[in-house]
Length: 395
Ligand code: LMR
Image 1 (cartoon, helix red, strand yellow):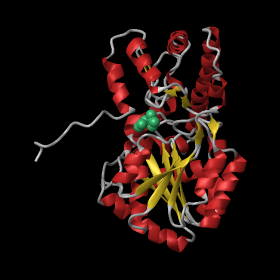
Image 2 (cartoon, rainbow, N blue to C red):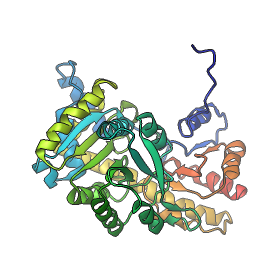
Image 3 (cartoon, rainbow, N blue to C red):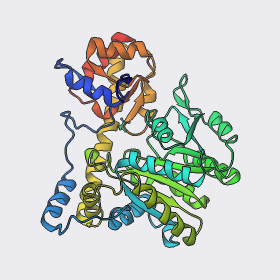
């Protein structure tokens, strides 16, 4: 059975973490996977998470199965976090299930779409998160792409995007990043969200919104603007969210898939199908991460603490964007890198070529994704000089 197997290349993002761990250079810098690091290069457990975990240890009464939807308290809290007091909640049109991370949410969304329409196509932005194509293909969807980023001018190519979306047939799905576009850091403006929402309504394509970074862009409410607008405008919508980044719960694997239908009756049908999709996949989601998030969000005190910790992460990353731009200039780089400060969230596209990316790794032990995506969260006041000098030397 196994004798014909050939090795596969390492994952373009996770493979970097393995190489980084094996590198003995004391100056090495990990700007690969999207993981928040503080100014000391550590990924701390948030204090609100520690408090919620202690609460769970003291109060958990059972480890019996929760069912395929996971924790109802978590699912309700996530609806409010994503949608506030949106009418789709009052109208009972949304069904949310806890999932193993945002990736689990995307996979279940893909399989749900396949259930609605076997052989369906999902359109993803070019570029997009390196795993989107694989997850949706594995779920049985066709994957196509629409233009998104103008590599030359380092900005959004909205005209090309909207022209491509005009060609998407009804009943196909379109993946949109709610905020902090991964990998480009370039987000839609409010006016652009409006145009995409109107187009989705006119054509009848189904937006699938990937919200993996709520709170890392402008703020929790601001970052949900686009998806709330979509929910205002459309009868049907899917949201895939993640608590990996904003709660720092990466390895706990907790996210949610939310499907909005046009009526409570339709939502009931959806609510019978999505758990069935989960049941034959991983049966039920893990519970620990969900318990932490629901404990934080159902406590005023812990929620306030979380807001503060999230803001600290957001502010630190934004500070590093400006610092990197300044340090590049100090190191004699004349090329304009100011676009780094106009991007949102954890990532930035440096816009250097694959050979330069490889030289950063081989000659300087600086690990960034091959597309030249850097995780800005890996920059600190201690490593920024070395980083800027190294980039300057490969340009
Ligand atoms: C990333 O894009 O680096 C993160 O979402 C981590 C991952 O799973 O790829």
